[in-house]
Length: 233
Image 1: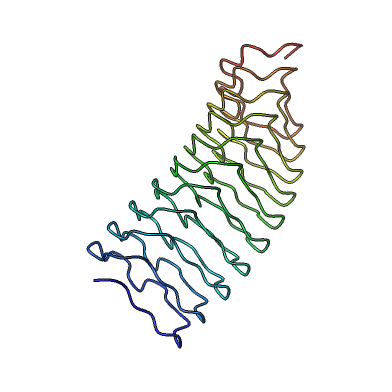
Image 2 (image 1 turned 180 degrees about the vertical axis):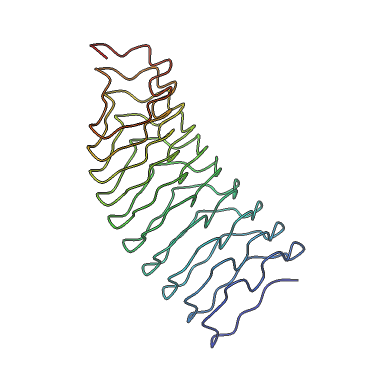
């Protein structure tokens, strides 16, 4: 049958996790604050995701809910979206990120039917694999001023255009833009970056000169097949 939730419920953490035969649409009571893993592995749920205004924790909420449709949502008080929609590959529309979100790690991993522009709230610190394999996203990549981890953030986002970005506090850029073959403009690397391995792998339309921040230690295959780069290495 369908999931249930009474109005008095505040904590739905893990409530329906691994209920692989649940059907119907997900629900969330008006007073719920914690939705961590609420519907993770509920493979047969359909309909659109939900998130009421009081929710703060969406970590793993819809992980591997393969059959959810509609647009992802993020309530105004959510602080963590850690792997919230990972592998929800039937979701369409634009990604969402509220102003209070700090962790977008893996939030839209393999949501390859999302469209529109990527988003990143001003308080986000982790974008690790946030948009990995979101191959239909368009527009420019984004990176908030507090982001420290961009590893694989946009890997395989082949339709993104515009110039790559790197916030002033980014440390990890490993594979950040790997296979983003439609990006143009010049590569960037902030002063705090240590890992640039594969950062611009196969970004064959980037122009300008390659860059390397003063603290970079790993540049393995950073500019592999960046055939339009010019200038001196």
